[in-house]
Image (cartoon, rainbow, N blue to C red):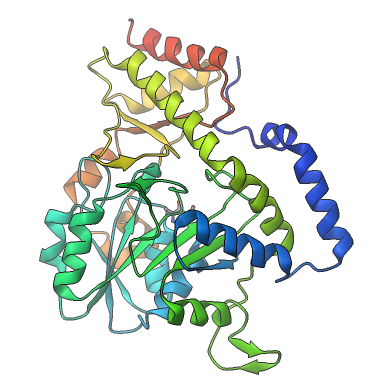
Length: 365
Ligand SMILES: Cc1ncc(COP(=O)(O)O)c(C=O)c1O
C-alpha cells in the first residue's frame, strides 16, 4: 500500500463540481485581481474567525511581514518568537529590519510563557506566537505578559485554521492574526495565498494599502508597500473550501483520536498532548520517539510517507548564523524525536489501520 502525506488531487475530485463552476465563473468575468471574490472571501473569513476585518494577501510570510510593518516594527526593535516553526515565523521579523529573539518551547511545542520574561528588553515590541501543528499556544499567559509590558501579540495561525481557545477562534486574540493558505494547510488554496485578520481599523487600512504597492487610489502611492494581492481564483477556491473546513477539521480530530487510542499502549511513543480549553485542529499529528529515523525508514519501506516538522530549529539555520550558538535545550531535544504521521481528512479506514499496524509491527506489538 502507498500512503502519501496529502491527497490534494483527490480533494479536488471530491468537490470538483463546485471548483469547476467557480473557476469558470472567474475566468469568464475577466477580473482576476482584487475583485468580488476577494472582497467576499475577506468578509466571510473575518466572520468565521470572529473579527471585524480581513485583508487577503499573497502568502503567509507576507501576511506576517505586512502585519509587523502595520505595527511600525522595524530597525532597532525586537520581537520574541519560537524556534520551532516554519522559517517564515522568524524570517518576517528580520525582513522588516527588526531582531528575532528566540525563546524555548514548552511540552506542547509552543513558546514557553515561563521563559519569555527573561528575554524582554526595552527594545521588545511584540510577541509572535505560533499555534503550531494546529493547537493554540498558551494564549492566556502570553496575553498577560503582553499587557504587563505593553507588547503587541501577533498570532501566526498558518497551521491553525479553526482552532479555538475557550470557544473563540485563534487569530482573534492578538493585535493581528496571520494565515497562510498554502495548499497543504487545513484551509488551502490551489497555489499561494494568505490573509491578515484584525479588529483594529488602522491595521486593516494600512495592510489594504500596503498589499497593493502602498497605493491609496490608482497611481497614488503613500507608503512603501509590496505586491501581495490575493487573486480572484484563489479567493473563489477558498470561499468553497471554507464551507467544508469545520467538517474536515472534525475528521482530522477523529483520526487523531484513533491514533491515540491504538498507540497509547506503546510506551516508546509519546503522543501529542492537548492543552486545556483548546480545540486542536490537528494540522499535524506529531509523535515523539527515540528511534525516529529508524521508524521513519521502516514506514517508508512499507510505503508510508511521514515528515518531520521541523528537523532543525530556526536558530540553527544558516540564515540565522548569528544565533547558531544559542542553546535552547527543549527545542533542540525534540527536533531529534518528532515525527509527523499522515492525518489528512481523506485518509480512509484501511489506510489508517495499515499505518497503525505497521507502527505496531516496528515495536513488535
Ligand atoms: C507556522 C507557519 N507560519 C508561516 C508560514 C508561511 O506561510 P507561506 O508558506 O504561505 O508563506 C507557514 C507555512 O509554511 C507556517 O507553517
